[in-house]
Amino acid sequence: MRVLRFFLILILFSGSSLYAQDFLRVDQHEFAGDSLEGKRLLKNIKKAKKLFYKGKTASSECLNLLQECLSFNNANAELNYNIGLCYLKYGKKELALSYMEQVKEIKPNLNTEMYLLLGQAFHYSNDFTNAILNYKIYLELLQKNDGRKKADFVAVSRYIEECKNGQVLIEIPTEFDVEKMPSPINSDYNDVLAIKDGIKLFFNSDRKLKSDTKKTFEEGSLRGFSVQLKNGEWTGFSVLNDEKHTRNLPLMVSKIDNNQYLFYDKNKGAGDLIFMQKNDNFWLKEMDVFFVNKVKTNESSASFSADGNTVVFVSNRDGGKGDIFYCNRVDDGKWSEPVKLGEQINSAYDERDVFLSSNGKVMYFSSNGRNTMGGYDIFKSEKDENGNWIEAKNMGFPINSPYDECHFSPYEGDSFLFDSNRGEGGNFDIYTKKLIVDIVNVPEVNKEPVVPMPVPVDEEVSVPLVIYKIQIAASRYEIANAELKHLYRGAEEVTQLYDGDWYRYTIGNYTSKEEAIFFKDKSGVKEAFVTRFENGKRTGFITNFSLGKN
Image (cartoon, rainbow, N blue to C red; front, side, top):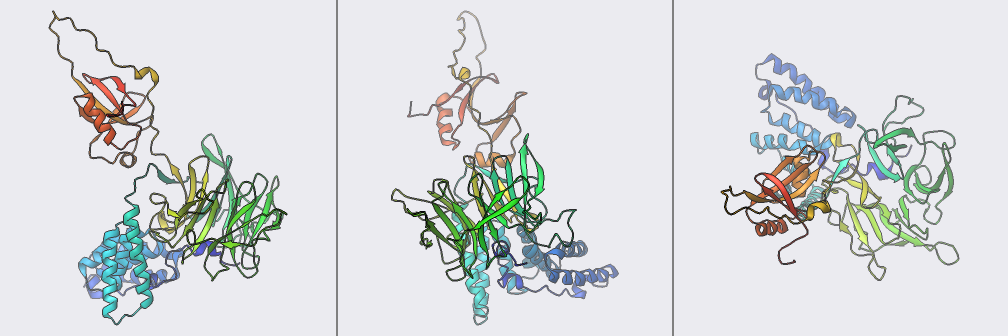
């Protein structure tokens, strides 16, 4: 079976010299000394080396053996280097950082590649400043060695540009976070390309099922699954089958309408797009997308406008890399010749996984060019008033990261789905938008002005203690600190109050209403409002009021 271009190409830097680094030899005397236990553990290191070169499937066992050795001697530079390298190549890449920092502390001149791997570990940890520093040290060392590894010089210069992009993008504030979809959608395997269709969700995975046999399952091969949402739970997990009830079904890449879906057939030509329809129990091939497909080229992704008159698609027909093309249905019902989109969309690198909005005016796609912060990032472009696509913009954090992000699919308002390999083990998972918190609007009955009770002048009374707080959020459930930090980025301490029904989150203790309103406007929380407390009891609200506006 042909390896899927649009999937395996996402293994970041897999073809570069970065992960061609060698597993280092651990010196017996430095690691074990005269210890019998240490000498025994040296055998584990030799086993781990063999497992390292076997690839990802053996990486977990490799790391377990190395970690056992580390518990005996955590001050060996070569051992730490090997663990860091293994995490960078096969695991959750930012976990490599502590090991590579230990290498630098123990043996700062261990080898040149140490600074490349350290830069990569900082890069994946979003520490772009330190990543740039170590990348530059690596380049300087390359130059001192008569410019060896020129390919590395070009690649690492690109990594530095990615880090500079990341420094800019990470500072742009956002009003949402993202989260992994739950099981059974995500698994310990690669789960990609999710399409929401009403209460159903279609996606692809290379997971193995208990019912699989050697004849029905090929290791690493993607196939389609579906689940449906019932009472807030994803249920009805099933495998997508064709009319022959085989599991070698082409991969669904987009929905055309309620009856038609677009699939990618890896076995046709160099990879072609086809229309398919769903029967009650299986999928039927309808026809090839003849006006898009081309002999000897790979067409891996496409998306139609709602009226069916415009299609954008990805093809490698222009020099071996992916570019985005479009064509329109003309007056006689025929399709125009495909046209490559301009530099507002396509770059000198690889574009892929395109999605067109129903009105044909917004386009999302993935690229490892432009101002990516590492690997493939998701970009967005819109048409201007003249119908021209404007310069595509990086969608930034938290959607993009130094890892690979692809297959962006918006649905139901501002919700969306996408894939990323930022998760455990370096596998791809499906992510969705996570609302940080539902800001609770104050009921109208609570918006009446607070009228203080009259105090008789002939009685001695205690003066009530009145303070004002800024309420930034309220929720039926306790809000995690990370979510609060995304919501409110100021320096004031956030206080949590619980009244038996709601968790309320406030900042500040102000003695005047005007002061509270002033800092409310400065808080950066759009729906924040001022709450009045008298002797510790909440007595009223001040909403929709800003100094200088009312």
